[in-house]
Image (cartoon, rainbow, N blue to C red):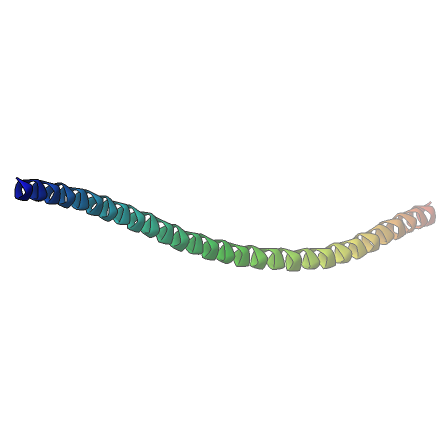
Length: 106
């Protein structure tokens, strides 16, 4: 009976060890899955960060192009103002000439 009791105790111990081993394997599997998800998330974060950097460079180029366009438009505006002043002077002179011409024709 002692041999039977020892065999039974050993069987219970074996089942207990198998149960603990199964728990540990399941726990390790869960940890590996969590680690894999974290690595993938980190990889995705790096990808998103790279995309954000590329977008920022594109925006910077667009801002520089807009700044250049604004400078050119300011130059054009100045030239148009000079032309407007010249036209106004010519209109005033033509008005004076018209008055002089009508006076001479009287």
